[in-house]
Image 1: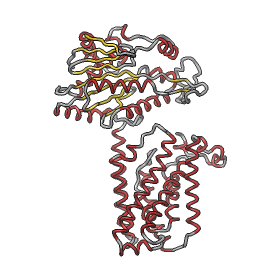
Image 2: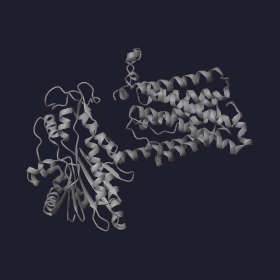
Image 3: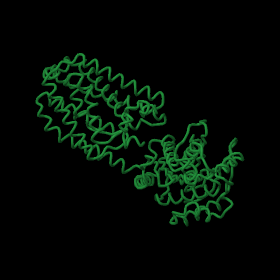
Image 4: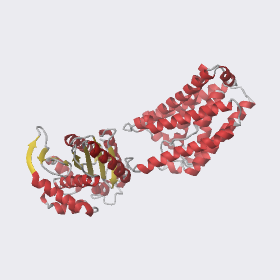
Length: 528
Protein backbone atom coordinates (compact mmCIF):
# COMPACT_ATOMS: atom_id res chain seq x y z
CA UNK A 1 0.00 0.00 0.00
CA UNK A 2 1.25 3.48 -0.85
CA UNK A 3 0.72 4.85 2.65
CA UNK A 4 3.18 2.32 3.99
CA UNK A 5 5.91 3.84 1.86
CA UNK A 6 5.14 7.53 1.74
CA UNK A 7 3.40 8.08 5.06
CA UNK A 8 0.47 10.43 5.65
CA UNK A 9 0.80 13.98 4.30
CA UNK A 10 0.93 16.64 6.96
CA UNK A 11 -2.26 18.43 5.86
CA UNK A 12 -4.15 15.10 5.90
CA UNK A 13 -3.51 14.85 9.65
CA UNK A 14 -5.71 17.92 10.10
CA UNK A 15 -8.62 16.31 8.20
CA UNK A 16 -10.02 13.62 10.48
CA UNK A 17 -12.21 12.24 7.71
CA UNK A 18 -9.13 11.62 5.56
CA UNK A 19 -7.41 9.36 8.08
CA UNK A 20 -6.70 5.91 6.59
CA UNK A 21 -8.16 4.21 9.68
CA UNK A 22 -11.66 4.94 8.40
CA UNK A 23 -11.00 2.79 5.34
CA UNK A 24 -10.77 -0.32 7.52
CA UNK A 25 -13.66 -2.73 7.92
CA UNK A 26 -16.07 -1.94 10.71
CA UNK A 27 -14.93 -4.78 12.98
CA UNK A 28 -11.24 -4.10 12.45
CA UNK A 29 -11.67 -0.37 12.99
CA UNK A 30 -13.60 -0.98 16.23
CA UNK A 31 -10.93 -3.39 17.48
CA UNK A 32 -8.07 -0.98 16.67
CA UNK A 33 -9.79 1.93 18.42
CA UNK A 34 -10.68 -0.27 21.42
CA UNK A 35 -7.05 -1.32 21.91
CA UNK A 36 -5.82 2.26 21.60
CA UNK A 37 -8.40 3.59 24.07
CA UNK A 38 -7.63 0.80 26.55
CA UNK A 39 -3.93 1.64 26.42
CA UNK A 40 -4.60 5.35 26.93
CA UNK A 41 -6.78 4.54 29.93
CA UNK A 42 -3.99 2.45 31.46
CA UNK A 43 -1.50 5.27 30.90
CA UNK A 44 -3.85 7.70 32.63
CA UNK A 45 -4.32 5.45 35.66
CA UNK A 46 -0.56 4.83 35.96
CA UNK A 47 0.25 8.52 35.62
CA UNK A 48 -2.15 9.36 38.45
CA UNK A 49 -0.25 7.09 40.87
CA UNK A 50 3.26 7.88 39.59
CA UNK A 51 5.91 8.98 42.09
CA UNK A 52 9.01 10.67 40.72
CA UNK A 53 12.40 9.04 41.36
CA UNK A 54 15.65 10.30 39.87
CA UNK A 55 17.17 6.82 40.00
CA UNK A 56 14.25 5.26 38.12
CA UNK A 57 14.27 8.06 35.55
CA UNK A 58 18.02 7.61 34.97
CA UNK A 59 17.62 3.85 34.53
CA UNK A 60 14.72 4.40 32.13
CA UNK A 61 16.80 6.88 30.11
CA UNK A 62 19.68 4.39 29.88
CA UNK A 63 17.40 1.60 28.63
CA UNK A 64 15.70 4.00 26.21
CA UNK A 65 19.16 4.91 24.87
CA UNK A 66 19.80 1.22 24.15
CA UNK A 67 16.45 1.09 22.37
CA UNK A 68 17.50 4.09 20.26
CA UNK A 69 20.76 2.34 19.31
CA UNK A 70 18.79 -0.72 18.22
CA UNK A 71 16.48 1.46 16.13
CA UNK A 72 19.48 3.00 14.41
CA UNK A 73 20.82 -0.45 13.59
CA UNK A 74 17.41 -1.28 12.15
CA UNK A 75 17.55 1.87 10.02
CA UNK A 76 20.86 0.79 8.52
CA UNK A 77 19.63 -2.73 7.80
CA UNK A 78 16.19 -1.57 6.66
CA UNK A 79 12.83 -2.45 8.19
CA UNK A 80 10.87 -4.94 6.06
CA UNK A 81 7.12 -4.63 5.71
CA UNK A 82 4.81 -6.89 7.67
CA UNK A 83 5.52 -8.60 10.99
CA UNK A 84 9.12 -7.90 11.99
CA UNK A 85 11.21 -9.85 14.46
CA UNK A 86 13.33 -7.57 16.65
CA UNK A 87 15.17 -7.55 19.99
CA UNK A 88 13.54 -4.55 21.61
CA UNK A 89 12.17 -6.70 24.43
CA UNK A 90 15.76 -7.20 25.61
CA UNK A 91 15.66 -3.56 26.77
CA UNK A 92 11.94 -3.07 27.38
CA UNK A 93 11.19 -6.14 29.52
CA UNK A 94 13.67 -4.96 32.21
CA UNK A 95 11.63 -1.75 32.34
CA UNK A 96 8.56 -3.87 33.14
CA UNK A 97 10.40 -5.80 35.86
CA UNK A 98 12.37 -3.03 37.55
CA UNK A 99 10.40 0.22 37.07
CA UNK A 100 6.90 1.60 37.78
CA UNK A 101 4.16 0.72 35.26
CA UNK A 102 4.05 4.14 33.59
CA UNK A 103 7.49 3.59 32.08
CA UNK A 104 6.46 0.19 30.70
CA UNK A 105 3.36 1.68 29.08
CA UNK A 106 5.08 4.61 27.37
CA UNK A 107 8.33 3.05 26.14
CA UNK A 108 6.70 1.30 23.13
CA UNK A 109 5.18 4.61 21.99
CA UNK A 110 8.54 6.39 22.25
CA UNK A 111 10.31 3.61 20.35
CA UNK A 112 7.74 3.46 17.54
CA UNK A 113 7.74 7.24 17.22
CA UNK A 114 11.51 7.06 16.73
CA UNK A 115 11.06 4.23 14.23
CA UNK A 116 8.49 6.27 12.29
CA UNK A 117 10.90 9.21 12.16
CA UNK A 118 14.21 7.45 11.58
CA UNK A 119 13.45 4.17 9.80
CA UNK A 120 10.29 4.10 7.70
CA UNK A 121 7.03 5.98 7.64
CA UNK A 122 4.08 3.63 7.94
CA UNK A 123 0.36 4.48 8.24
CA UNK A 124 0.04 6.32 11.52
CA UNK A 125 -2.84 4.21 12.82
CA UNK A 126 -0.68 1.08 12.46
CA UNK A 127 2.11 2.58 14.52
CA UNK A 128 -0.34 3.78 17.17
CA UNK A 129 -2.10 0.41 17.32
CA UNK A 130 1.20 -1.46 17.58
CA UNK A 131 2.35 0.81 20.40
CA UNK A 132 -0.97 0.34 22.20
CA UNK A 133 -0.88 -3.46 21.79
CA UNK A 134 2.69 -3.69 23.11
CA UNK A 135 1.84 -1.26 25.92
CA UNK A 136 -1.11 -3.41 27.04
CA UNK A 137 1.12 -6.49 26.85
CA UNK A 138 3.74 -4.82 29.05
CA UNK A 139 1.06 -3.63 31.44
CA UNK A 140 -0.30 -7.17 31.79
CA UNK A 141 3.22 -8.50 32.32
CA UNK A 142 3.85 -5.86 35.02
CA UNK A 143 0.73 -6.97 36.90
CA UNK A 144 1.80 -10.62 36.74
CA UNK A 145 5.36 -9.99 37.93
CA UNK A 146 4.44 -7.66 40.75
CA UNK A 147 1.56 -9.91 41.73
CA UNK A 148 4.17 -12.55 42.54
CA UNK A 149 7.05 -10.36 43.70
CA UNK A 150 6.21 -7.72 46.32
CA UNK A 151 6.97 -4.11 45.43
CA UNK A 152 5.62 -1.52 43.02
CA UNK A 153 8.68 -1.03 40.83
CA UNK A 154 10.52 1.39 43.15
CA UNK A 155 13.25 -0.99 44.22
CA UNK A 156 11.26 -3.69 46.00
CA UNK A 157 11.81 -6.19 43.22
CA UNK A 158 15.60 -5.72 43.43
CA UNK A 159 15.59 -6.26 47.16
CA UNK A 160 13.39 -9.35 46.88
CA UNK A 161 15.77 -11.00 44.38
CA UNK A 162 18.56 -11.63 46.88
CA UNK A 163 16.29 -13.28 49.40
CA UNK A 164 14.20 -15.37 46.98
CA UNK A 165 16.10 -15.75 43.68
CA UNK A 166 14.11 -18.79 42.48
CA UNK A 167 10.73 -17.10 42.92
CA UNK A 168 12.10 -13.92 41.31
CA UNK A 169 13.27 -15.82 38.22
CA UNK A 170 9.98 -17.73 37.92
CA UNK A 171 8.05 -14.46 38.19
CA UNK A 172 10.26 -12.83 35.56
CA UNK A 173 9.80 -15.77 33.19
CA UNK A 174 6.02 -15.68 33.73
CA UNK A 175 6.12 -11.93 33.06
CA UNK A 176 7.83 -12.53 29.70
CA UNK A 177 5.41 -15.29 28.69
CA UNK A 178 2.38 -13.14 29.50
CA UNK A 179 3.82 -10.24 27.50
CA UNK A 180 4.38 -12.55 24.51
CA UNK A 181 0.90 -14.08 24.71
CA UNK A 182 -0.99 -10.79 25.04
CA UNK A 183 0.99 -9.07 22.29
CA UNK A 184 0.64 -11.99 19.87
CA UNK A 185 -3.06 -12.30 20.66
CA UNK A 186 -3.82 -8.64 19.96
CA UNK A 187 -1.72 -8.39 16.80
CA UNK A 188 -2.93 -11.67 15.32
CA UNK A 189 -6.54 -10.80 16.08
CA UNK A 190 -6.09 -7.67 13.99
CA UNK A 191 -4.47 -9.74 11.25
CA UNK A 192 -7.41 -12.16 11.15
CA UNK A 193 -9.93 -9.32 11.10
CA UNK A 194 -8.05 -7.74 8.20
CA UNK A 195 -7.74 -11.05 6.32
CA UNK A 196 -9.94 -13.95 7.55
CA UNK A 197 -8.05 -16.34 5.27
CA UNK A 198 -4.68 -15.59 6.88
CA UNK A 199 -2.95 -18.57 8.45
CA UNK A 200 -1.42 -17.81 11.84
CA UNK A 201 -0.31 -21.22 13.07
CA UNK A 202 3.11 -21.00 11.43
CA UNK A 203 3.50 -17.40 12.61
CA UNK A 204 2.84 -18.30 16.27
CA UNK A 205 4.09 -21.86 16.61
CA UNK A 206 6.85 -22.00 14.02
CA UNK A 207 9.93 -23.68 15.45
CA UNK A 208 12.28 -20.87 14.41
CA UNK A 209 9.97 -18.15 15.74
CA UNK A 210 9.53 -19.90 19.09
CA UNK A 211 13.29 -20.37 19.38
CA UNK A 212 13.90 -16.68 18.66
CA UNK A 213 11.26 -15.60 21.17
CA UNK A 214 12.74 -17.86 23.86
CA UNK A 215 16.24 -16.51 23.15
CA UNK A 216 15.01 -12.93 23.38
CA UNK A 217 13.25 -13.67 26.68
CA UNK A 218 16.38 -15.23 28.16
CA UNK A 219 18.49 -12.24 27.10
CA UNK A 220 15.95 -9.84 28.63
CA UNK A 221 16.00 -11.75 31.93
CA UNK A 222 19.80 -11.66 32.02
CA UNK A 223 19.79 -7.90 31.40
CA UNK A 224 17.21 -7.36 34.16
CA UNK A 225 19.22 -9.58 36.49
CA UNK A 226 22.42 -7.69 35.73
CA UNK A 227 20.77 -4.31 36.27
CA UNK A 228 19.94 -5.27 39.84
CA UNK A 229 23.70 -5.28 40.39
CA UNK A 230 24.82 -2.28 38.33
CA UNK A 231 23.63 -0.13 35.44
CA UNK A 232 27.03 -0.76 33.85
CA UNK A 233 25.56 -4.12 32.78
CA UNK A 234 24.19 -2.29 29.74
CA UNK A 235 27.72 -1.70 28.44
CA UNK A 236 28.28 -5.46 28.38
CA UNK A 237 24.78 -6.33 27.15
CA UNK A 238 24.64 -3.92 24.20
CA UNK A 239 27.16 -5.76 21.95
CA UNK A 240 25.49 -9.09 22.76
CA UNK A 241 22.05 -7.74 21.92
CA UNK A 242 23.44 -6.31 18.68
CA UNK A 243 24.78 -9.74 17.77
CA UNK A 244 21.41 -11.29 18.61
CA UNK A 245 19.64 -8.78 16.38
CA UNK A 246 21.96 -9.58 13.51
CA UNK A 247 21.34 -13.29 13.96
CA UNK A 248 17.58 -12.68 13.80
CA UNK A 249 18.01 -10.64 10.62
CA UNK A 250 20.22 -13.35 9.17
CA UNK A 251 17.43 -15.86 9.78
CA UNK A 252 14.93 -13.53 8.11
CA UNK A 253 17.23 -13.08 5.12
CA UNK A 254 17.63 -16.84 4.76
CA UNK A 255 13.86 -17.24 4.88
CA UNK A 256 13.37 -14.52 2.27
CA UNK A 257 16.01 -16.12 0.05
CA UNK A 258 14.06 -19.38 0.15
CA UNK A 259 10.65 -17.90 -0.61
CA UNK A 260 9.04 -16.48 -3.71
CA UNK A 261 8.40 -12.81 -3.00
CA UNK A 262 4.97 -12.68 -4.66
CA UNK A 263 3.36 -15.84 -3.26
CA UNK A 264 5.40 -16.82 -0.20
CA UNK A 265 5.90 -20.35 -1.54
CA UNK A 266 9.34 -21.85 -2.03
CA UNK A 267 11.19 -20.40 -4.99
CA UNK A 268 12.34 -22.65 -7.81
CA UNK A 269 15.93 -23.13 -6.61
CA UNK A 270 14.93 -23.96 -3.04
CA UNK A 271 12.15 -26.30 -4.12
CA UNK A 272 14.42 -28.20 -6.49
CA UNK A 273 17.09 -28.59 -3.82
CA UNK A 274 14.70 -29.88 -1.17
CA UNK A 275 12.70 -31.97 -3.63
CA UNK A 276 15.86 -33.69 -4.89
CA UNK A 277 16.70 -34.68 -1.32
CA UNK A 278 13.18 -36.05 -0.81
CA UNK A 279 13.37 -38.08 -4.03
CA UNK A 280 16.72 -39.55 -3.02
CA UNK A 281 15.27 -40.46 0.37
CA UNK A 282 12.22 -42.07 -1.23
CA UNK A 283 14.40 -44.16 -3.56
CA UNK A 284 16.66 -45.21 -0.69
CA UNK A 285 13.77 -46.19 1.61
CA UNK A 286 11.62 -47.61 -1.23
CA UNK A 287 8.79 -45.21 -0.33
CA UNK A 288 6.18 -43.82 -2.73
CA UNK A 289 6.32 -40.19 -3.82
CA UNK A 290 4.72 -37.88 -6.39
CA UNK A 291 5.56 -34.66 -8.19
CA UNK A 292 2.89 -32.38 -9.65
CA UNK A 293 3.15 -29.41 -12.01
CA UNK A 294 0.30 -26.88 -11.97
CA UNK A 295 -0.23 -24.29 -14.68
CA UNK A 296 -3.00 -21.70 -14.72
CA UNK A 297 -5.18 -21.79 -17.79
CA UNK A 298 -5.21 -18.68 -19.99
CA UNK A 299 -3.47 -16.58 -17.36
CA UNK A 300 -2.26 -14.11 -19.99
CA UNK A 301 -5.87 -13.31 -20.84
CA UNK A 302 -6.57 -12.62 -17.17
CA UNK A 303 -3.69 -10.13 -17.07
CA UNK A 304 -4.73 -8.52 -20.35
CA UNK A 305 -8.40 -8.35 -19.42
CA UNK A 306 -8.35 -7.38 -15.75
CA UNK A 307 -4.85 -5.98 -15.20
CA UNK A 308 -1.64 -7.30 -13.75
CA UNK A 309 -2.49 -6.33 -10.17
CA UNK A 310 -5.46 -8.65 -10.19
CA UNK A 311 -3.25 -11.26 -11.85
CA UNK A 312 -0.90 -10.98 -8.89
CA UNK A 313 -3.87 -11.43 -6.56
CA UNK A 314 -4.78 -14.61 -8.45
CA UNK A 315 -1.27 -15.95 -7.90
CA UNK A 316 -1.49 -15.21 -4.18
CA UNK A 317 -4.87 -16.92 -3.95
CA UNK A 318 -3.45 -19.98 -5.71
CA UNK A 319 -0.60 -20.11 -3.19
CA UNK A 320 -3.06 -19.78 -0.29
CA UNK A 321 -5.17 -22.59 -1.71
CA UNK A 322 -2.17 -24.87 -2.06
CA UNK A 323 -1.09 -24.20 1.52
CA UNK A 324 -4.59 -24.96 2.79
CA UNK A 325 -5.11 -28.15 0.78
CA UNK A 326 -1.64 -29.68 0.99
CA UNK A 327 -0.27 -31.41 4.06
CA UNK A 328 2.33 -29.88 6.37
CA UNK A 329 5.16 -32.03 5.01
CA UNK A 330 4.35 -31.45 1.32
CA UNK A 331 6.56 -29.02 -0.60
CA UNK A 332 4.85 -26.34 -2.68
CA UNK A 333 6.80 -23.90 -4.83
CA UNK A 334 6.48 -21.46 -7.67
CA UNK A 335 8.49 -22.25 -10.76
CA UNK A 336 7.89 -18.86 -12.34
CA UNK A 337 5.12 -17.07 -14.16
CA UNK A 338 1.87 -18.94 -13.64
CA UNK A 339 3.48 -22.34 -13.06
CA UNK A 340 3.59 -24.00 -9.63
CA UNK A 341 5.06 -27.28 -8.46
CA UNK A 342 4.24 -29.70 -5.65
CA UNK A 343 6.15 -32.59 -4.12
CA UNK A 344 4.08 -35.14 -2.19
CA UNK A 345 6.22 -37.46 -0.01
CA UNK A 346 4.92 -40.81 1.22
CA UNK A 347 2.10 -40.63 -1.34
CA UNK A 348 0.84 -43.43 -3.56
CA UNK A 349 -0.22 -42.73 -7.11
CA UNK A 350 -3.95 -42.86 -6.40
CA UNK A 351 -3.60 -40.55 -3.38
CA UNK A 352 -1.44 -38.10 -5.35
CA UNK A 353 -4.14 -37.99 -8.00
CA UNK A 354 -6.82 -37.23 -5.41
CA UNK A 355 -4.73 -34.47 -3.83
CA UNK A 356 -4.08 -32.85 -7.19
CA UNK A 357 -7.77 -33.09 -8.08
CA UNK A 358 -8.67 -31.46 -4.78
CA UNK A 359 -6.28 -28.59 -5.49
CA UNK A 360 -7.75 -28.18 -8.97
CA UNK A 361 -11.32 -28.17 -7.64
CA UNK A 362 -10.52 -25.54 -4.99
CA UNK A 363 -8.89 -23.30 -7.58
CA UNK A 364 -11.92 -23.56 -9.87
CA UNK A 365 -14.11 -22.35 -6.99
CA UNK A 366 -11.97 -19.37 -5.97
CA UNK A 367 -14.25 -16.34 -5.40
CA UNK A 368 -12.14 -13.77 -7.23
CA UNK A 369 -14.06 -10.76 -8.47
CA UNK A 370 -12.97 -7.76 -10.51
CA UNK A 371 -14.50 -4.33 -10.71
CA UNK A 372 -16.45 -3.51 -13.87
CA UNK A 373 -14.40 -3.14 -17.02
CA UNK A 374 -14.56 -0.35 -19.55
CA UNK A 375 -13.88 -1.50 -23.05
CA UNK A 376 -14.22 -4.87 -24.62
CA UNK A 377 -10.71 -6.17 -24.62
CA UNK A 378 -9.01 -4.40 -21.72
CA UNK A 379 -5.71 -5.24 -23.32
CA UNK A 380 -3.91 -2.47 -21.53
CA UNK A 381 -5.29 -3.47 -18.17
CA UNK A 382 -6.08 0.14 -17.34
CA UNK A 383 -9.71 -0.42 -16.49
CA UNK A 384 -8.99 -3.37 -14.28
CA UNK A 385 -5.77 -2.26 -12.67
CA UNK A 386 -6.00 -4.85 -10.01
CA UNK A 387 -9.02 -3.47 -8.21
CA UNK A 388 -11.30 -6.31 -7.32
CA UNK A 389 -14.74 -6.05 -5.85
CA UNK A 390 -16.72 -8.24 -3.53
CA UNK A 391 -19.19 -10.84 -4.68
CA UNK A 392 -22.43 -9.23 -5.66
CA UNK A 393 -21.01 -5.69 -5.62
CA UNK A 394 -22.40 -3.43 -8.33
CA UNK A 395 -20.36 -3.83 -11.50
CA UNK A 396 -18.23 -6.64 -10.10
CA UNK A 397 -17.45 -9.61 -12.31
CA UNK A 398 -16.25 -13.06 -11.31
CA UNK A 399 -12.89 -13.91 -12.81
CA UNK A 400 -12.82 -17.48 -14.18
CA UNK A 401 -9.67 -19.15 -12.85
CA UNK A 402 -8.85 -22.76 -13.67
CA UNK A 403 -5.69 -24.83 -13.62
CA UNK A 404 -4.30 -27.88 -15.38
CA UNK A 405 -2.17 -30.28 -13.34
CA UNK A 406 0.24 -32.98 -14.42
CA UNK A 407 1.28 -35.58 -11.84
CA UNK A 408 4.18 -38.04 -11.97
CA UNK A 409 4.14 -40.75 -9.31
CA UNK A 410 7.15 -42.70 -8.12
CA UNK A 411 5.88 -46.09 -7.00
CA UNK A 412 7.50 -47.80 -4.04
CA UNK A 413 10.70 -49.55 -5.06
CA UNK A 414 11.20 -47.58 -8.28
CA UNK A 415 14.40 -45.67 -8.98
CA UNK A 416 14.04 -42.29 -10.67
CA UNK A 417 15.72 -38.89 -10.53
CA UNK A 418 13.88 -35.65 -9.85
CA UNK A 419 14.53 -34.48 -13.42
CA UNK A 420 12.85 -37.61 -14.76
CA UNK A 421 9.80 -37.08 -12.55
CA UNK A 422 9.57 -33.43 -13.61
CA UNK A 423 9.76 -34.43 -17.27
CA UNK A 424 7.01 -37.00 -16.73
CA UNK A 425 4.84 -34.46 -14.84
CA UNK A 426 5.47 -32.03 -17.67
CA UNK A 427 4.25 -34.63 -20.14
CA UNK A 428 1.12 -35.21 -18.10
CA UNK A 429 0.57 -31.44 -17.91
CA UNK A 430 0.88 -31.13 -21.70
CA UNK A 431 -1.71 -33.86 -22.05
CA UNK A 432 -4.06 -32.02 -19.67
CA UNK A 433 -3.68 -28.86 -21.75
CA UNK A 434 -4.22 -30.74 -24.99
CA UNK A 435 -7.33 -32.46 -23.63
CA UNK A 436 -9.18 -29.25 -22.85
CA UNK A 437 -7.56 -27.79 -19.69
CA UNK A 438 -9.03 -27.61 -16.16
CA UNK A 439 -8.17 -31.22 -15.36
CA UNK A 440 -5.58 -33.53 -13.82
CA UNK A 441 -3.50 -36.03 -15.78
CA UNK A 442 -1.12 -38.47 -14.12
CA UNK A 443 1.73 -40.75 -15.12
CA UNK A 444 3.26 -43.28 -12.74
CA UNK A 445 5.99 -45.87 -12.97
CA UNK A 446 3.38 -48.57 -13.43
CA UNK A 447 0.27 -46.88 -14.79
CA UNK A 448 -1.17 -43.67 -16.16
CA UNK A 449 -4.28 -42.07 -14.70
CA UNK A 450 -6.17 -39.10 -16.06
CA UNK A 451 -9.30 -37.18 -15.18
CA UNK A 452 -10.85 -34.92 -17.77
CA UNK A 453 -13.47 -32.37 -16.76
CA UNK A 454 -14.80 -30.85 -19.99
CA UNK A 455 -16.75 -27.65 -19.36
CA UNK A 456 -20.50 -27.88 -19.44
CA UNK A 457 -22.34 -26.10 -22.23
CA UNK A 458 -23.25 -23.09 -20.12
CA UNK A 459 -19.72 -22.92 -18.64
CA UNK A 460 -18.23 -22.99 -22.11
CA UNK A 461 -20.56 -20.25 -23.32
CA UNK A 462 -19.76 -18.08 -20.32
CA UNK A 463 -16.04 -18.60 -20.80
CA UNK A 464 -16.35 -17.77 -24.47
CA UNK A 465 -18.13 -14.52 -23.63
CA UNK A 466 -15.38 -13.54 -21.18
CA UNK A 467 -12.57 -14.20 -23.62
CA UNK A 468 -14.44 -12.78 -26.58
CA UNK A 469 -14.50 -15.93 -28.68
CA UNK A 470 -14.93 -19.66 -28.69
CA UNK A 471 -13.17 -22.04 -26.36
CA UNK A 472 -10.59 -23.94 -28.40
CA UNK A 473 -10.11 -27.63 -27.84
CA UNK A 474 -6.51 -28.68 -27.65
CA UNK A 475 -7.50 -32.26 -28.39
CA UNK A 476 -8.36 -31.27 -31.96
CA UNK A 477 -4.76 -30.22 -32.67
CA UNK A 478 -1.54 -32.22 -32.92
CA UNK A 479 0.26 -32.69 -29.61
CA UNK A 480 3.44 -31.10 -30.95
CA UNK A 481 1.52 -27.93 -31.87
CA UNK A 482 -0.20 -27.71 -28.49
CA UNK A 483 3.07 -28.24 -26.63
CA UNK A 484 4.86 -25.61 -28.67
CA UNK A 485 2.07 -23.02 -28.32
CA UNK A 486 1.44 -23.51 -24.61
CA UNK A 487 5.03 -23.67 -23.41
CA UNK A 488 7.33 -22.04 -25.95
CA UNK A 489 9.79 -21.07 -23.20
CA UNK A 490 10.84 -24.65 -22.37
CA UNK A 491 12.13 -26.31 -25.54
CA UNK A 492 14.48 -28.53 -23.52
CA UNK A 493 11.55 -30.59 -22.25
CA UNK A 494 9.39 -30.41 -25.36
CA UNK A 495 10.74 -33.54 -26.99
CA UNK A 496 10.53 -35.63 -23.83
CA UNK A 497 7.02 -34.36 -23.18
CA UNK A 498 5.74 -35.16 -26.66
CA UNK A 499 7.24 -38.66 -26.46
CA UNK A 500 5.63 -39.25 -23.08
CA UNK A 501 2.24 -37.97 -24.23
CA UNK A 502 2.42 -40.24 -27.28
CA UNK A 503 3.28 -43.14 -24.97
CA UNK A 504 0.22 -42.41 -22.85
CA UNK A 505 -1.97 -42.20 -25.95
CA UNK A 506 -0.68 -45.57 -27.16
CA UNK A 507 -1.15 -47.21 -23.78
CA UNK A 508 -4.70 -46.03 -22.94
CA UNK A 509 -6.76 -49.16 -22.38
CA UNK A 510 -9.61 -48.82 -19.89
CA UNK A 511 -12.02 -45.94 -19.35
CA UNK A 512 -14.42 -45.74 -16.39
CA UNK A 513 -16.86 -42.92 -15.80
CA UNK A 514 -17.51 -42.03 -12.15
CA UNK A 515 -21.17 -41.86 -11.21
CA UNK A 516 -22.56 -38.35 -10.93
CA UNK A 517 -19.38 -36.74 -12.28
CA UNK A 518 -18.22 -35.42 -15.61
CA UNK A 519 -14.77 -36.85 -15.00
CA UNK A 520 -13.27 -39.93 -16.60
CA UNK A 521 -10.51 -42.13 -15.28
CA UNK A 522 -8.10 -43.90 -17.59
CA UNK A 523 -5.74 -46.64 -16.49
CA UNK A 524 -2.86 -47.73 -18.67
CA UNK A 525 0.53 -49.36 -18.41
CA UNK A 526 3.34 -46.86 -18.77
CA UNK A 527 6.92 -46.72 -17.59
CA UNK A 528 8.12 -43.26 -16.73
